[in-house]
Length: 193
Image (tube, rainbow, N blue to C red; front, side, top):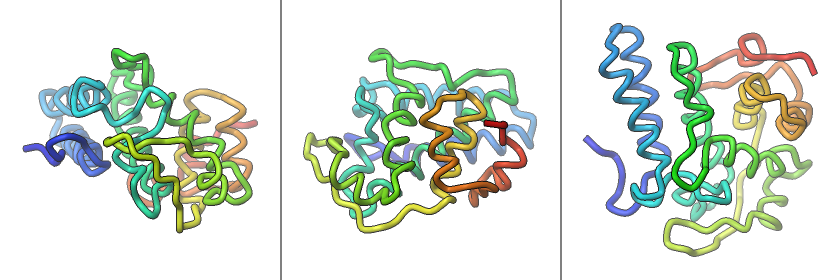
């Protein structure tokens, strides 16, 4: 079963892999778990429907929305959740790079400046330079991020102590809470600055 459209995949396919991997852990089913990890790698590959992360770190399938920044962080939350499930089960998806050298780190780096800005939506409108899966650039944003969306950077900072990730956490303040999978993310992943 494939939730992808004929030419691209949106965040729901990555979230489906989080669900499959979570179920696999509960059911102690290594086949399902490895299938979810393999699908993550496939979804990142540019030869598969363009890949979910472009070479510049944008998430093309989420760019052409009124709330593109919010949907992009939502997609990255799925990716980082799957990376965490993998990490806890002996697989490192954080460092997986596709044939173009793109990884979740590429996307985290791209979006960190938007998420740490005083006005993330305005920063996005002014500086996004992202193109959707059809090559169109639509850098509009009507929503404002909140700490829930930015909470993925608490996990990112725990993984890799980059100043840009720390800046996002400092911008939104602690404690941070991720409302879909990880929960009290500062308690589970917080690292001293």
